[in-house]
Image (cartoon, rainbow, N blue to C red; front, side, top):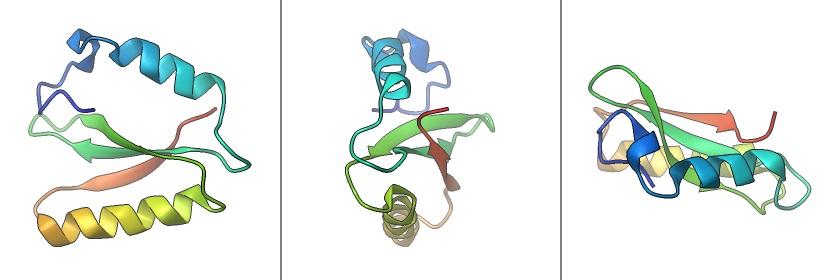
Length: 83
């Protein structure tokens, strides 16, 4: 989903519509979670979405653990997708 480190994801076709849709309604009973990655400019980019689990945050943390095993130089975080 990420723009490959381009920083401004608004230029990725469909990005804004996807973010708007996800922010508008959760999937399942729990609040969906964005996986965000800090890019080289120090900005957080949405790179994944966890939804549909009982415990979306816990599943997001597990996913980030896998990303960190693949590349421990990257910084990731889980962010609620709905306000």
